[in-house]
Image (cartoon, rainbow, N blue to C red; front, side):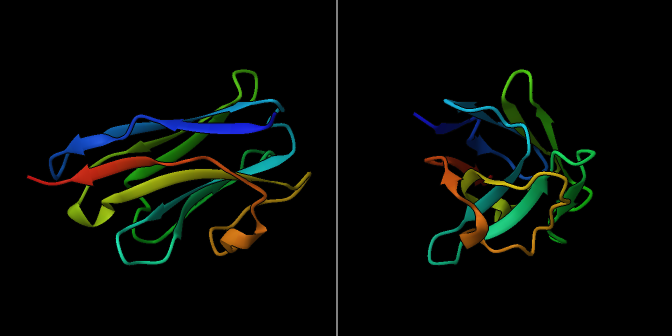
Length: 128
């Protein structure tokens, strides 16, 4: 059974850091694009970052560029999102998702409908 499970969310003060992890089971991450999305209360789910299996190219939303770093380990079947200098507007439920894309780069402008499988999400709250 194909499954994605996020972990690492929590409550953090502004300026703090969190590291989210997404673990895959039931399939390998080879040739998949993996994306991180977030959804704040009352808002649409938005793309935060993505990483391809094609030279591990990455892309970020402008709002997180320079503060977040995405990485993947196909052998461990995990994808991490290191989030630094967190702001209250980073608050939301964070989801990882994948879609099959061999030899393709990724971009965060690809809509969530492109993604085939999703995790259940992990809550991130940035507040003092």
